[in-house]
Image (cartoon, rainbow, N blue to C red):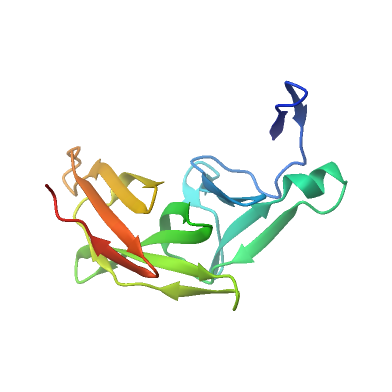
Length: 171
């Protein structure tokens, strides 16, 4: 991993992450970077017997030669399709299949209790290869592929209000 220092206009090698990966997703809150490692071994998700892990990296700790990587166990085998921050809060989107339909389940990380809170499930038809992004106080879910491997122009936007995600009405 490489870290850019804008003051020095230079790159330096940072501490290596405690996982090998590709297709990662990441976001930042304050002085930490949150990373879901994605895939490893070219075919399987980064899973342990009963968990998927989310890692945090603290660049300031790296500079002080302290432990800069931490692992958070999500206790889930569900596929993570989005990770982002809104108003200094961490959100995660996981995919779950119920009754042959795919659903996206948003989770909100409660910093005070150090736990994840499940929010209202979103039923969505394109759940493969989605792009997720947060912008201002909205969550956008774009594209994807249908079960017939056809690419989609789908765009769903959701407004984050406290810990509730509400679909926006297209204008």
